[in-house]
Length: 229
Image 1 (tube, rainbow, N blue to C red):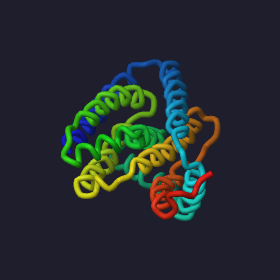
Image 2: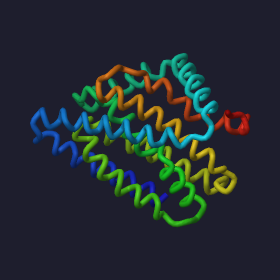
Image 3: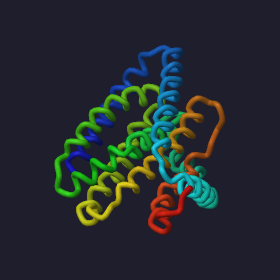
Image 4: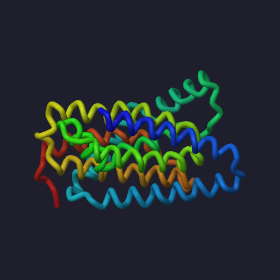
């Protein structure tokens, strides 16, 4: 868990620095930050999504996950939770949910996250997660300066998600096929593209309602591993 703890600290520290810079920057600089973050998120999402080798699994997972998320109305629940949190902490950030979700997907859906967490959980070194920590710390500066304090709060699901993978890997890591990591990263990439569209104000997509696709892709690969074009 050492790598995950370091990762969590760097995200919080980077976010704090980004928030400090945000208060001193003119509005036009904040606006250009949003545009750069949106474009980078779009690029990163495409690069992750293109790694898939199981397109049918990807499409089915996204459709099924979106339907499940819509039935559970995850977007509405997340908005209620973020509004409650903002009121209790007296936060005025309008993009709290977008900031937290964008940062969470950026920090947690890449193959480096899963590979690093599995390597550490199986008794290996924390090398990959420490490298990732440096990358996330720098990214959080830019993200927090543009998207606000929600980026800092992404450290909470990061700790739970990444730490959970390490704990599971300590017991089951040697049985995890590499294709699971690749396809999970691909689904995360598609969701990042959706987030980029939101950040750039092109169209409001219910990305939160699509999150169950991350679980569904694992189930589909386990259930029908050879079903593909």
